[in-house]
Length: 367
Image 1: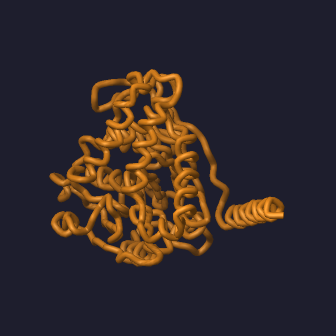
Image 2: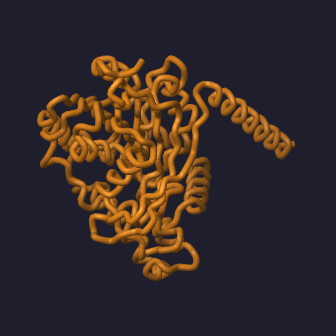
């Protein structure tokens, strides 16, 4: 009988999920997916790829003013190990892209790219393995700029919003292309070099992979499971919320089962070289010397239970005064926050974004 009940519950969940997805799809224009190829892309290391593929999704239509400048483009950037498609869910897209919502896709032209080394863009696991160019965040932002200007013919951005790694890309965007962007919203980041526990976490992740004997300098035939498991363990601990994990595993057996399922699913979807490159890409990130170059309005949001960006370091309080048009919000820990993952919950920080957009509405934007 228990087997039948379990099966029925699975069916009901799947049906509910399908209904939810259908409802979500009706709330905003259907995404369009495509690839853009950058020819002879040269990385900061001097390495070059004859063809760098960038996968992306767009929602909505670009609108230009009388001078031909696109005024409604929004670039949304994912975190380490993620993809642009990860935003297309009820929690994120369902809370932002619908009719009348903050980033209403009938008003805005939304671009959701997969960064270099992520998703369906060019990455080590596609064949080059450890011979893939060792990209950095600067390379990733330059590639995003190429996608917009050469691929989508977008010559201006109303907003760049990013989560985690994507948030760090926001800071790079503000400095690298100051006249290209009106506003920046980095969620879960700090505009300074990655050091201390954050850097140690990344080093632990990388060392766990490369020190597994089965890694074989990146030329493994099977995933180095032991090293990957160690890397995933570190990542899970650093990006989690004790409050929410206790809800997921309120008893010993429930916690053990939850963890086993997490490791199984994450191992099945993670490649060692890809993960290694993703964390190595942050090695020279440090926008702090040039914060005064940022001319865009900036709304930086962190959460108090984020172990990756712990508020007790006081970094944001020291750095934000150097951002001419910057504002910093620290969200207190609550039943709604999810540690580092709070960055993907518009229900938690959406009111700040809404106010920010209203305050910084461009007089030339197309409504």
